[in-house]
Each structure stands twice: as C-alpha cells, then as structure tokens.
Image 1 (cartoon, rainbow, N blue to C red):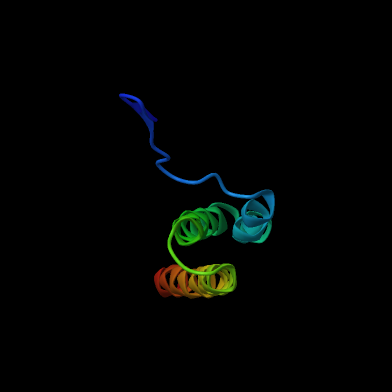
Image 2 (image 1 turned 135 degrees about the vertical axis):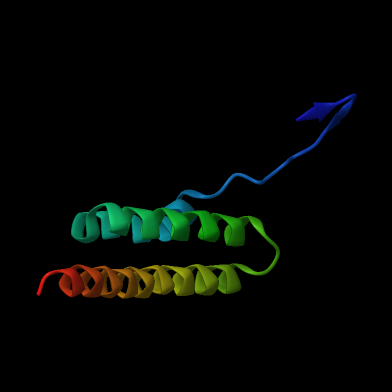
Length: 91
C-alpha cells in the first residue's frame, strides 16, 4: 500500500514452502468431507496468522504443526460427538 510517498507492507508474502506446510490440514477433506474441510480451513487460517507473526522460522513451523495436529484431533472429537448424537436418536 502506498501512502503519500511511503510504501507500507501490510503483510509479508508467504513463501511457497510455508503455503505447503500450512496447507496440509486441507487433506482432511479427502477423509472427512465437509467436517474435515471446516477443520482444515480453520487450521490453515490460524497457521497463516502464525507465519505472518513474530518469531523465528522453527517456532513458526512448530506452532503450525501443532495447529495441524489440533485440527486432526478436533476433527475426530467432532466426529465422535456427531456419531453419539446420531446413535442416541436411533434405538
């Protein structure tokens, strides 16, 4: 963005390998359908915030990896909740 004579960078562009790393949770779509897609997209959004934030590369990759694992665990927890709700209605 340019303001007057000054150029201001709102957010640094991510590197290709950062996109690949933070995009891994979207693979939940292939196994988890819509629920997997929601968990994957939320994880990607959070990882993008991490990569655009402060800190070293190793820290960012570690946090993003933890977010991806959290998305996978969250998917399975939501899946178990949905299955228990469905089974509770069918005697």
